[in-house]
Image (cartoon, rainbow over all chains, first blue to last red; front, side, top):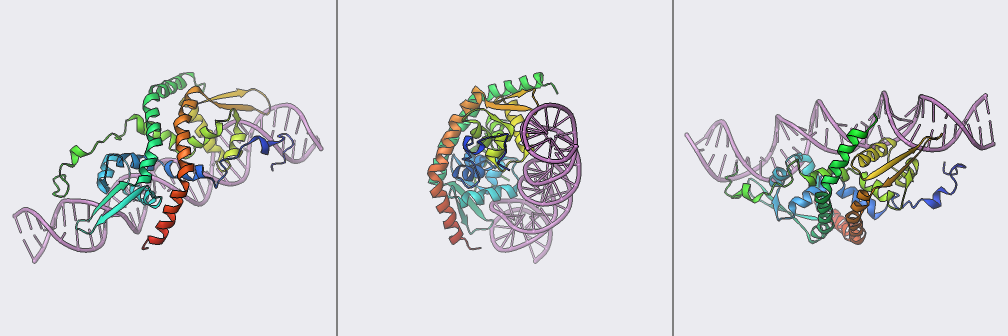
Length: 132
Length: 132
DNA sequence: GGACATAGGTCTACAAACTGGACCGTGACG
DNA sequence: CGTCACGGTCCAGTTTGTAGACCTATGTCC
């Protein structure tokens, strides 16, 4: 399969750093799951309760929020505090690790804000130049 | 609904910056789709052909790679050059915009590498403390 | 005291997204 | 002359996400 005669020396020209068990993949798979970054960003200003997060993110389903929070907690990015009251009260907040992640994420958000016009322009251009 | 005695003044404490039509969501939805960042990172060292990308990323399906590349091209992050040869040759490379995005992404990757032990430790801890 | 609301979930159908493999057309290799 | 390779697309089947009913247990209203 990889001893292809047309394609000499493939293995050495490809870096293959992203082959499955690597830290980049590992972390990217977590935060690149549509919701995690959003939750983290929403927690940036401070502690939030479950439904509060849901309202702020607005189009996340309960199940996904629940699952995402559980993962973030598992990864040590968010801490969960449940108060044994009725109705229950549960507070989520960033851990130190979670806050440290927000630094690079903030850079990403800054990029998004800064380059949004360029992206939109590219999209417009694509619509016009597309041959299909 | 928001006159909950435990939760005074909810509406004013919620920032709601992430309500749907916002640049953050817009860009995060693109790059947070499991594959886009990976493709971008794989293109970082230079031009790549379709199947070359597929081999380097290794567990991406043809369809998703095709779709992801199309989106990245649409957003002006990647350029596509098809040579009318047989068998066809198609080269993808980062645009300037795409390269500019890699700066904050690299910061994220650096975070991932640096804090991977902490994340793994948190996962271990979770496994032990969990009551279920 | 009985109905109803409330917070934080979970469970269950149903819908959307993703996967793996077949397929396409044409030229080069064996 | 059969088979492989390239860059895709298309289809069937599996996985993932969604909306909404439901749960627990108390406080509030009447």
